[in-house]
Image (tube, rainbow, N blue to C red; front, side):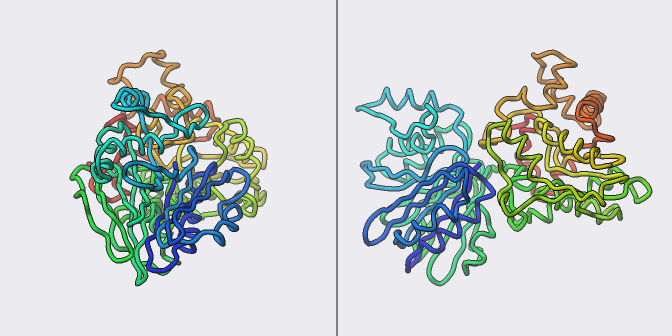
Amino acid sequence: MGGFFAATLKEDCVFDLFYGTDYHSHLGTRRAGMAVYGPSGFNRAIHNIENAPFRSKFSSDVHEMEGNYGIGCISDYDPQPLLVRSHHGTYAITTVGKINNDAELVKEIFSGNGPAHFLEMSGGDINKTELTAALINQKDNLIDGLKYAQEKIAGSMTILLLTTTGVYLARDKYGRTPIILGKKDEGYCATFESYAFLNLGYTQYKELGPGEICVMTPEKVVTLVDPGKDMKICSFLWVYYGFPAASYEGQSVEAVRNRCGAEMAKRDGFTKDDIDLVAGVPDSGIGHAIGYSNESGVPYGRPFVKYTPTWPRSFMPTHQNKRNLIAHMKLIPVTELINGKRLLLIDDSIVRGTQLRETTQYLYDAGAKEVHIRPACPPILYSCKYINFSRENSEMELIARQVIAEEEGDNVDRTILEDYANPDSDRYAKMLEKIRQKLNFTSLAFNRIDDMVKSIGIDPDKICTYCFNGKE
């Protein structure tokens, strides 16, 4: 995943850029960067943030940078923003998204008129932000270039482009990730997370629509390409990615999580006679657990807490062995709330199941009598095609697909997968029971896709649920 912040101010923007970007640190742990433009030209800094948070890595850069326009990013993948010199002039660019046809695009660029090359190699692969810039540079002007890039990229790509005259903002074609604008007397900002500008004195100005392209200066925001009518915003923004204080399309992340928890409680019908405590896996499971508790009347509690002084971010290293170890290390049990208790635990999702199985065993070892698991989203059956989702690399890593393969073989017909995605089918029930047995839960019930969509509260046709049901 990744996040971004941009500012165009009548005064120096570095302070706002630094703190606005830092407010996206929950969206990635590998790379971060800032680029500014001012009287002394362009200035850029990129750092690895795997072993230290954003603020400590960039605190010295803040004192050396100056500029009225700036963009910053948190990235779980490629180093960015990149500085590019082209026939458009010099610009800095940062992106959030995923390119599925990168090999085809690279081949097309190499076969075009004139020489071409790529410098920003990441782990042997072409940097996707540089590839996006190469597409933009195929056209005679930036507006046509941004439109061209959005049309050519299969997947999803939101683009921020810093020039000497302002910041261009291009939301991905189907609005799978957000761009939200803030305004104050000194100018404007653009952000992935809506709350990131609140403590900097901005008020919300607008959200870009799907495919909308704007240019932002200290004086105004001008729409260059009108938004499209079709939207497919990622449902996981509310369930998992988003910080509780964020809102997308007018729907609060925390409120949606509360509603999801309430819907699960209605389906269960559990009372204090059935379970003793409702808990959420920190951090994204907490809002769901509060909603479940409020609806069911079962007390909410914290049978374990995350050690926040050295675990400030929700994302973890992408290497799975390290992730499993860290998931165990960062949670500290509160034995008095576990021993002899019947616990209902809500996590945002089950991907591989490894972490939740270990967490459950952790609770049993601390004396839990029962551990009921309620993931806040449906079973994940498909790898995401549109966002770089760092928690899984192939569909056969998904616990749900592993169980299906055991029942149906490796090559499963699409109609059969659709039946497994149906929460009212016999196959779905069998899949849940096998997952429950494998992961050693007392009981298991996923949030239903219809309840999740209802909880999000916008037009269902505008919500992407591909990873749950394979529907585009």
